[in-house]
Image 1: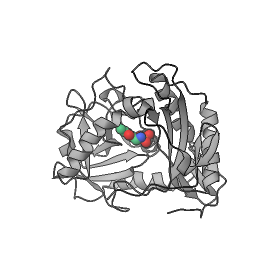
Image 2: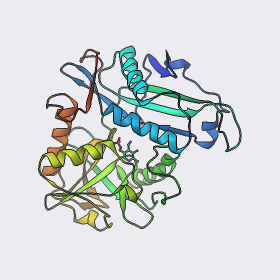
Image 3: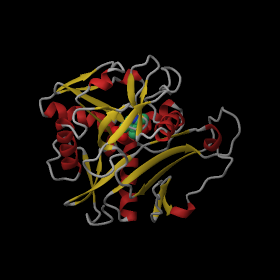
Image 4: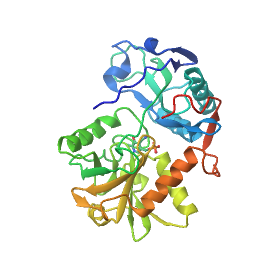
Length: 316
Ligand code: PMP
C-alpha cells in the first residue's frame, strides 16, 4: 500500500519557508506537460547529537548538474541549497526524514522551447521509512524487467530528471504485477544497469561487482559510499559491464540508494542467491552504512552535515 507523504509544517520555495498546503502550481505549468524538472532524494538521520544529512553537498552538486544538463536556470548555488536544507529541517523540527529538493519549470507555457520560462526550486521533507526491505534484515525478490534503460544519447542518465522515472515506472509496475518487489533493468545492450530507483551490487567470491556509469545508471551517491566502504574494508571491487547471467550466479546481491539504503536482494528471477538470506558482505556493508549515518561510527569521510534539531524529534 502507498505510504502517506507528509504533511509537514513547511516547504522551502525559492528562499521562503511556506506552509505545506501553499506549495501549489498551476496546471498550465510547463513541468506538468513536458516533464521539465530535476530532483534529488536525500536522507537526514537521527544521531546522538541531533539530525545529520547524509552527503548533502554531493546531492546538491548532482542537482546542479542535472539542472545544467536540462538548462533549467537556478538562482541558487549548491552552498545556498545546503543552507536551505538545514533551514527546512529546523523549521519542521525533523531530525530523521527523507528530503526532496526539486527544480521545476513552473511558468505557464505551452511548447517545448521554454528557455526563459520561470524555474522554481523547492525543498520538501517528510518521514519516510525503509523502502524495499520489509523491515531490517528483510530483503527484496527481484526480476529482470522486459523494459530497457534508455539508450545513451537519448535520456541522459547522469541527470536525475523527472522524465527518467517514466521508464522506471514501467519496470516497477511490471515487477509488482508479477509478484516481485523490484525490477533490475538492463541497458540497451542487454547488460545489467540497476534497479528502478537504486543501484545494484553483486558479490561473488568476496568481490563486489557493479555496473559502470556507461550502462545508463544514475551515478548514485550511496553506490559511491559503498565503493568507499568496500575499499576501507580491503574488499575487491570491480566496476564492469555485467552480463545478465551473472545475476543468477552471484553469491549475494544488494540494492543501494538513498531511499533503498542497503537492501539485500534474496532472489532474482526466482533464482535464490546463496542460502536465500542476507549475505555476509551485504550484512557488513549494511551495518557499516547505518553505523555511519546514525553517528554510531566515526564519520571519517566527512559525509554528515549536522543539523541543530533534537535527535528525538520525529525519529523512527
Ligand atoms: N538509480 C536511480 C535510478 C535512482 O533513482 C537512485 C536514487 N536517487 C539511485 C540509483 C541511487 O542514487 P543515490 O544513492 O544517489 O540515492
